[in-house]
Image (cartoon, rainbow, N blue to C red; front, side, top):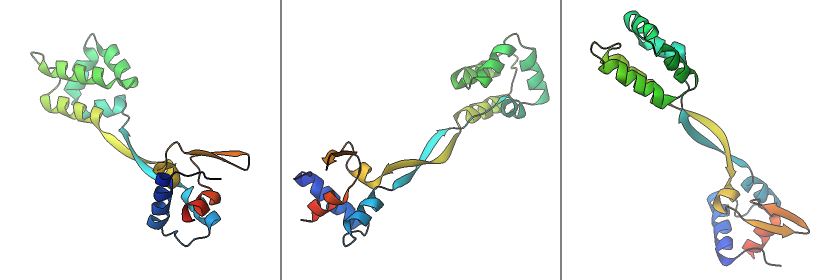
Length: 156
């Protein structure tokens, strides 16, 4: 029974070559190709009230906390509502007289757009090379998983 199209065969053979598995026994090669990869995920860095207040001078902090929108500002920070925090910082800096300095506004804007890289489990090399690939072998379905039978077929 044939599981692979000509394109699948070419992709699998290239994957074996790229990973130094051309001569590896099919079951061992399949296991290696099914190992999850590690990917770097970039996400927005969380921040809290202490982070924002640490940016502000004592005078600016007092001015913000005495403002009639202080509760809304704190709620926006707690909820990680970045757009609202950015809007408050921009409006507070543009008032006459300003509640916060321009440099403080810029620092708050930088805080709300800061990112952090984390490592996460990614798809296997096989799944990345053949996304959505599914086949049934001996009554068992395999979704985005390599099997020795596929390697044997690709090599034949």
